View 1 (cartoon, rainbow, N blue to C red):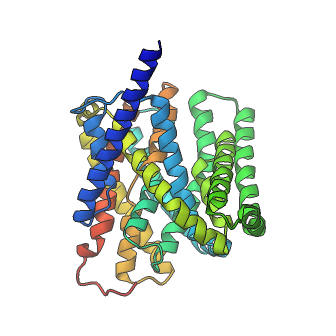
View 2: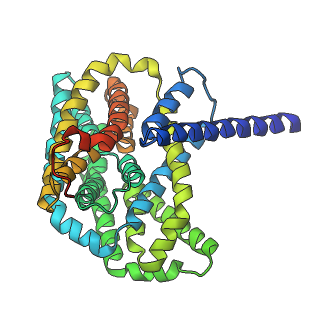
View 3: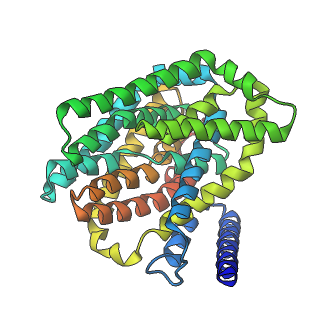
Length: 391
């Protein structure tokens, strides 16, 4: 038994070492090409996962938890870049952009579902898949490209925040639809989710300084552990009440301010990069490449339409904040990527037996835009080389 256990540990360590080494090679290749490494991480996962060239037998729980932590740390890092005042300003100025974004990008998926002959539950789920931009991918790309301080970035952030807040209502509603829960129980779930988000926003905006004092320490080790502990607890509570763990982590980052925020951002950076890389790799690992061709045509068509609608809404939102033409282009392309939320939405519907083809279509769609989004963001300026360079 001891020998068997030792062999299992050795195998897991070797596999993890190979995974991290593969990530390093992919990141090095992306750096030399001046690209975000996200597309390469995703394609690497496809090559190493089920149906790929080499199959790694990693634990599903390990893959899921590692990916979840990656998203949480990405959103925590994004939140650390903004103060509570920035969030208030963004919400006041950006709620209209959030509404326009929701209508413009939910509708194509909803209509596509009905055109495919799916029932209303599957169509509503597909609408969610096409609506939701990937906060994780976008945060990573903006950080990699050094655009967090750009004039157009607050417009992108406001749309992401509104999107995550909308998910607090959408996910319970979707759960009620696919489960056939009664009206009373469904209404209660939605009310709890919305109340939780409202309470979290109030605490963040009014009492963020208290959290900064609680976690503050002269010791980097104490500060890192305090921030991580608080973030994981808040993210877990948010997930428990059917609010996104990502929005919980983002609000913790926003609540921290001053020197505490600056130090925490520097300390968390390496952990964020490691777990973010594993998230995108693991997403690819869980997708069987053999299932993708059957949904490719629809995924490409839907991807083209919703990439255009995201670019339009992002450009419009940036224009409202006074960004120049290049800034509007950057804001629009930044929002194209889809990712973790889209897969979660499809997974809820498929698990309830609503529409098996929804999972395959969502995987093909997300992989397409998770790769195309960062590339468009990186080369967005080249799409209109004669535009003025003003941010």
